[in-house]
Length: 239
Image (cartoon, rainbow, N blue to C red; front, top):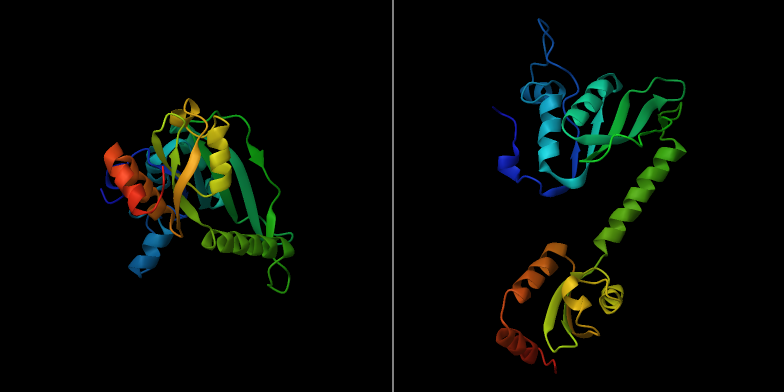
């Protein structure tokens, strides 16, 4: 079997799976593109629609989201396979190339282990004006995505250390230090700190990379009290 399985990637590990799979079934008795890469990209040679959805459902966490871009004529199959794999289809966004043209693409959103009610079918988004330029709606989508990308690029992440009311230390991760400390002191930050309030911020480190901040948190939490005291002392933190 050529298609990727959760064994390769990790089952129940992903919040979102997005896929733009081959749109067309392999035609019986018909020629396909002689270019192998194009043929694989366009036709279900190595994996078919049902297999894509099976794998996505297994990769996703509980309530994880699945997004698929496909042809409208395959919509019934998409819904059928999603339901068969315990994914509730929640949103369908059609796209049409120009005004008064039929829909030629759909983006389907499904949620893993979600009820089947609550489906929203949106009006088609028109992609191009008559002069082939993008419509205002598409331009807005592009600009919103660029703004979101810039915001993400400028985002900061933090590893932090708290001193709890009982004298113990707590290491955490956040992308908003002020709000996170407030959450801890309101009893909504973490189970550990809820019964050890108030907490005070002793130390923090700033990161551009989310994974680096998470690794720092993990690294701190997996040491004993003596090691944490030495760490804080080395960083000139009085506790």
